[in-house]
Length: 47
Image (cartoon, rainbow, N blue to C red; front, top):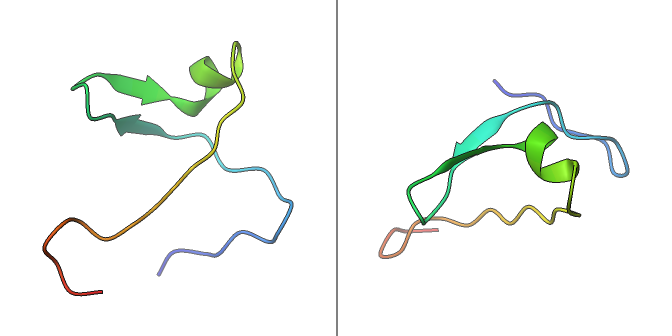
């Protein structure tokens, strides 16, 4: 099971694929921009 982050804590390092097909790391993006992470269930899925 994944541990939950406490409100206000920093996210752990990770990489993720974006809708443009590129892979981004949180560390690289934070060098130049602020980041807002948004999680949602995929389209046409329950929940």
